[in-house]
Image 1 (spheres, rainbow, N blue to C red):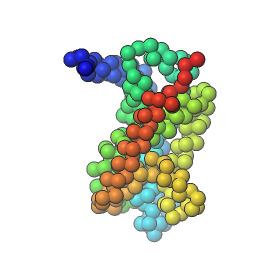
Image 2: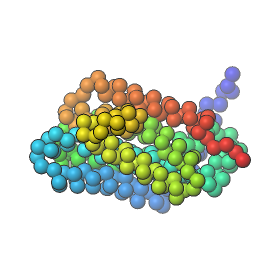
Image 3: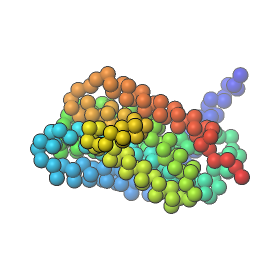
Image 4: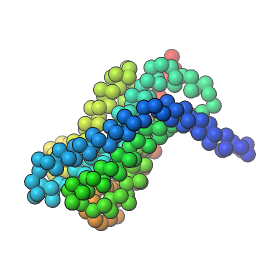
Length: 252
């Protein structure tokens, strides 16, 4: 049976981890915020500039939803992978294992410290992208659950790269490649990619995040969105279990 203050103590320890991660970003939060907003929005603007009206009507929802999910992927994959790799490389993960905190609490604190920057980017892309492509703003109702569950689901990719890469530079390279896969497979409609890429789309959490946002951009909601959000939850649970077990680097 847990001690009366056990839950409070765990919460307090996690709060300290969060303060540590946020304090590290206190002088560099502006570049993170700008990058997570400007790059995805820039892609949406570029695509709008080279498309005619018929293409805008056909592919607008896919492009805006894919760009919004890219804002999530930049923090959950690229930034997280590089930070986790740096923690592994400098021995910080070994240090954290000597403290009364769980593995998942350490990684979750890092993820949340970056995820706060992707939410504004997601909202900005949805609002301005909807204006560019003349779409509905109803997707904003799903922005929060897609951001939360999408960050959790995509974090599994970021953590796997961070733990698997030999150093922080390689983690950056691998995570950028993964982000490009998320970008292209998220923006391109399913019927516009080769058939062999169908299974790849099925195992990428970003596919379900894009699908969850698209109906709102069309001005409606459907039961399929609940399945897409549930799929993101399952990806997040799988990543959670992997971090607690086989994914965590073995001590020398």
